[in-house]
Every structure is written in structure tokens, then in C-alpha cells.
Image 1: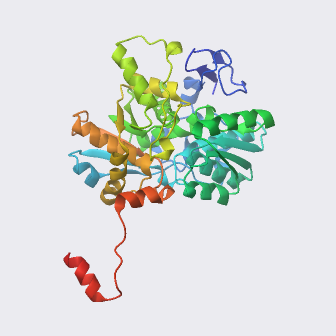
Image 2 (image 1 turned 120 degrees about the vertical axis):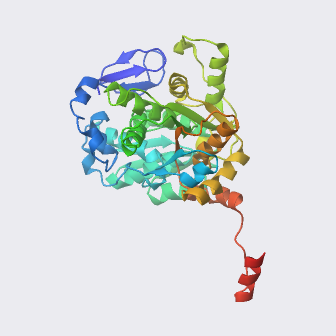
Image 3 (image 1 turned 30 degrees about the vertical axis):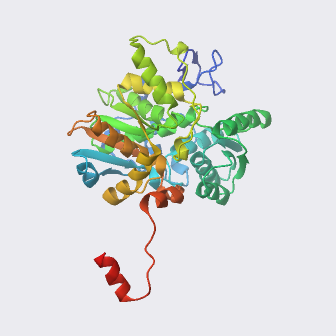
Length: 415
């Protein structure tokens, strides 16, 4: 790590900068690296299988040795989803299954780097605003190292995610309002009380944890680069992190191209998709990023993990989609719900609604003739279906209640 660069105005800060946002324009910051120095430490990176996200330490901006972290985060499986792919005539469909992280979501990647950064600077309380997953994730990671976590969520956050955060010992504050209200209150409180604010799209260190997902995909594919990666998108940080990972790999010369980063959103929470479409419709080839304002919406989707009115990492995500040549795909809640049992039954991977959005988006792209049969496509499965049992049951149906008699079984089988 050698500093920070603003996504909007490109102003730079030194590596010892302690803020989270650009002091020149208030934009989000990107952590930068001396790629020549990194390259000297990764000569054998592509030959060793990763055991955790800290296996890529040269690309991480923390000082505390991650090898001593008590939980294994990252190194999640990449599955060849052959049956699922065949249902659409796709020969090379893969699922990156982040549901096996300790709190069962991709958010653990961000939380562990944020907590490591907090440890580096001597902080002992970490806060976060969350729709649910980031809160349960921070609670999990903080508990592992004995740090206090304070979690702000909208009062409508799913019960399973609240139960996780509370079980891990976090102080959970359910705000009467939406995610954006919780985000603003978390920031105000963190500034007031001196907490380390891990909130996604505000703290630049979260992107650094999420980018390691790209490294793992690259290594699992033996150095091949996918044609496209489909990412569930709310505030944009997971998508911008995926893009950042491939940019880092290219920056040190390990790859020569970056895959298309596709944005999968609910049609009811499509601020980033709307912004990308407006930019592309304008026909501009040279974009002045300082002049780009990301749309705001009134998000109402069932996919709570990607329900965001004002995407806090929206500009970085918009840049990632446009500069990688990716698509923006919006799908209905009905399409998202239908994708849950389809994925589970044809791949064995059980997604929550937000994590099912990429598969729903792939289906839509096939209908639109956007994806070719032989493309290598990776869908990021960002959270477990156990996070939202209500939605899963709504999609999958009810159990059959029968009498305790073999005749009842025969009747069901004959139906």
C-alpha cells in the first residue's frame, strides 16, 4: 500500500492518511499499491492453493499478521455448476460459493480487513451500518478477537441476521427508518464517540477484503480469466471490490485482461444500473467522473441485502461496470424468488434472495442473447439461504403433512 486516490476527483493522499473520504471533494477513496514492490513478493502466487484470504498478504493494506486470525475467511469453493448451466445451454457456468464463510456471507471478507485495520491503529470499538449481513459479519469477526461491535440496522432487518449479530455479542441498534437512515446515524455516532466505522462504501478497507474473491477465482481456474462475473449489487462495494481484484492482478502482470463485471440488481433497487444506462445513452466516450451523480431510488425489494436507496459506493461500481464493459441487469422480485429453488435443486448451493439475483440475471441475459453458449461465466453467491428462510419457503413451497402410515406415503408417490 502506498496511498489513496479519490474515485471522483483523483486527488491522492499519503499512506498515513487516517480519514475515510476524500478531503478535497468528499468522494470515496481507493487504496493504491506499488505494483513493482508487490510483484517482488508474489513470484509463486499462482502455484499455491489459498488457505484464507490472507494468503494474498502482499495485496492487503494491513500490518497485523493475518495468519494469526482465529477464523478462516475466504478460500471459498468455486463450483462448476454443470446441471444449472445446462438448463440454459451454458457450458462453462461456475458458482463462487461465499456462503461458507464464518457468518455465511461475503461480508466477512470486508469485516476481517476492517477489524485488522482497527487493530493496526489501536481502535477497540468497531461500528457498522447494515441491512443485516454486514452487521452479523462484523459481530462474528469482532467476537473472534474480543473487540466490541456496534451494529446499526433498519428495524425491518431479517430476524435471522439480527439473531446472528446478537448471538455474537454485538450491540444491535434497530433504527426506525431504512438502511440510509441507519448509515447516517452510524456515521454521526462514530464521529461523536470515536469508533472505527467499518460501513461499506464509506471505509475504503472493506473493498480490499472483497477484492480477494477475484484472486481466488483466478487461482481456482488455474490462471484463466472468466469472460464475465455476475455480482449481486446494492451499495456497489462488492462489485467495485471484484473489479479492484482483477485490476490488481493485471497491475502486477499476472493477467492481460479484465473480465466483464456484470451488475445484477433488483428492478426495485436499481440506482447503479440506472446511472450506467444514462451514461451509456449519452454516448460519451470520455467521462468526467467528477460530474457523475449516482441515482437515488426508493428501494422496496424482497432482496434486503441489495435494498439501497443511495449506493454508498455507487460511483466506484459505475466505473467498474463501464470500464470493464460489463452489463447492468435488473430483475423482478418474482424472478429472484424463482431463482432460489432453481439454484438449490440444480447446484446444491442454497442462496438468499440477493445471492440468487445473479442467476436470475444470467437467465435474463440468455433471453436477451447477451451471453454466448461457450462463455466462462461466474456467479457470485454472496449469502446463505438460511439468512432469509421466509423468502426461501415462499419460493420452495410447504412440506406435505401426512398421517404416520405407509398408505399415506403411497398416496403421495402416486399423485
